Length: 208
Image (tube, rainbow, N blue to C red; front, side):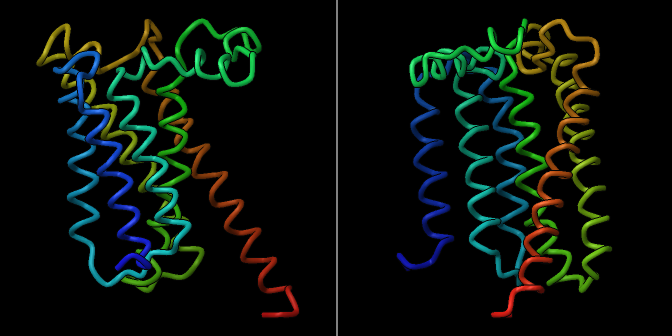
């Protein structure tokens, strides 16, 4: 069992979730953020007959950890810039002139980056799609799930008022939803480009 990468994936995610569930910044906002966590876990648990690559599991673990840390602080208050300064002495806000907390943008980018390969593997192994078709459908999956998540955020803001507004996390940006969806597509683009480059390199390698 210890040699099974899924075991380590589950153990890591469970450990991080337990730690981040202790005294979150805003319990109501934390609970709202767990909707996405629960949906993702239920989806993965319901998938059968797919041999996930270590790269896929690693990407999903990274996405889960970054998302879970963000739910502890709420995305808009996650002190990533303070962590960066403590580690390197540099400030991302000063370097790029940022006026808002961009942790949510980072998570949306990781969404596109980290679910593309698992989606591709599912589409190839379970549905038997070609490489081109699987890449095309994975783009639509990233786009549609990003849009659905933005609708869920908007609905929470309407239903829960101030608590939902913290969950929404627009930070005064009227184009927040559009920017989040766009950066998810950027994540898909990077993952697809790297995957294509790796596939091309393997085909040209004399060992394959």
